[in-house]
Length: 344
Picture 1 (cartoon, one colour):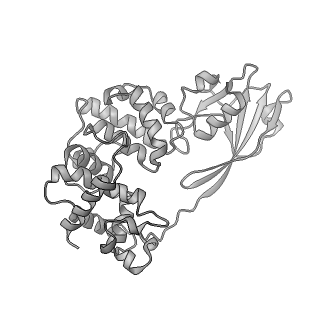
Picture 2: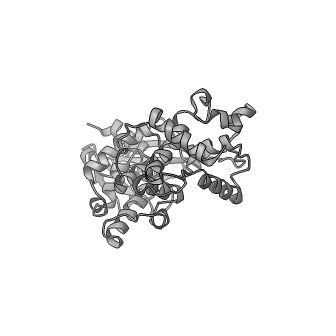
Picture 3: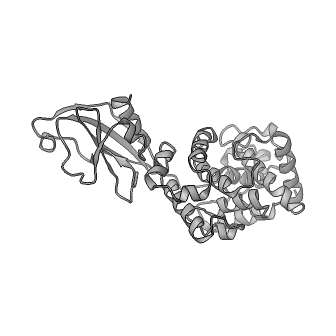
């Protein structure tokens, strides 16, 4: 395999069989590409499409996003998860507006200096928008390259990750770079998302099948190699859903660091609810436990509906009705609970 052969195959396959109807394709507007790339981190395309459209409708350009209130950004992001992405998105827009005159930098090296933009995301924006010869290495692309190359080194080790980056850079198109880079970059993404799947890869559809070391070995699913496994710690949270007579709920912003940082949430405590917390006049009803998985935690949420009492430990909180909480940044399981209890 030569680098030019590899790149040419990816480019030709993408032109004939790759995805071409996604709403962020067919543009070289870095704002739109950046927005899609941030949303697509750890989130499936089908989920992102609706959020992407709503964000653009409300924030059609980077200055509009920069001028928004943080709560409005988090409210539109609610349900996408990994909320630090939304906070970085807002900070990045503010930096582009303030320090770059509302214009995104045109190189991967400069893009990477902005909040929330890592090496792979910066390279994707630079390749799609400016035709820069820069390698990406997101999860899908990492899987494609390690399988084709038979790259069996443990990617937990930083030195091995750097070695894969070097090989990814060597495989980039070498001719007609301005035209080839957007299609090549999209082609690798498409291969990882639709053909070179984590489970049951469809090798018969792959333009790189005859070059693929993993296919010859008969065990593509052993790549990429990562020995360290994520272990989720289980935590029990009691959600104190204080409701008033008008179907409003008491909500307060979470602390600026930690799980659901800055999002609005009912008061939380880490032990079962007792009468000493609520007072003798409160009507209390426990709801079914809700399990919510995060990257490193599994939350066992114990919703407790409380009527006839008001929290004494949430000085930043307030009563919010259905129309009001729709405009707040709420964690997805909290929004579902509130809609089920008090929605209209």
